[in-house]
Length: 311
Image (tube, rainbow, N blue to C red; front, side, top):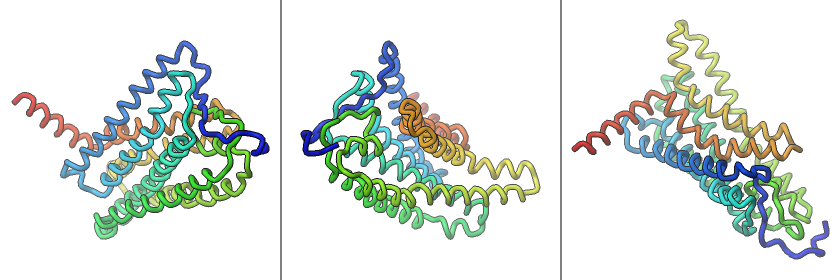
């Protein structure tokens, strides 16, 4: 495409889901309910961790950060997505599209890194329990999260700036429900090879390395658990990391599935819907149902709230 033959793109039209027809209102209501539950569930995790003494542990500190990441992801995708679904497509300004891409990518990258450090936390707790408190402490948690935020801010900013310097002329229609990386590059009439190479290089510390660390951590964890002589001991030890393993499987499973169907746009939309909308909903539910500390803290808060209401 020759850039000079077209006017500069200032707005982008998101097609969303074009085949809903009579199910549009139902789908809209379901998404709205999911969005509200997601916000409430993740806010509940943050409030529980910050107010319950039993949850003042590194694992739950990172869990609260994960909940914040899920809130950021939902707020960057779902509000505009609701508009796209309701009207059968919607226009978004180019600057707003880049902003959505930035916050979406930042929240996804943060989730990868948080899941990685949470797996390292479980590795230390199970494989090196005697050194756990000296390695994983408050100072480590604060420094790690601050480093993650700084790292992500700089890397995602680099990618966003590179995209903003591309020329966008002519076509302004994206067959998706949000401004993702690949659909944005497809609209550009300039050479995107440098941006694609840049994203591949930057994906290494944000996606590939975290996945490798998680995999290696759980290999060591599994071998350590198998060495425990009693069945009860193995089950009790495994239960301390089962919630995190379920979240990791859910997140990376949906993320990897997108790349298994490179030319199937409808399938890619479904998997994108899963990791942008469903995963932030399920994360707090998984931790609430499978973690005894969270359930106990939630029970105490409910009892305390009931007592206040009765008084």
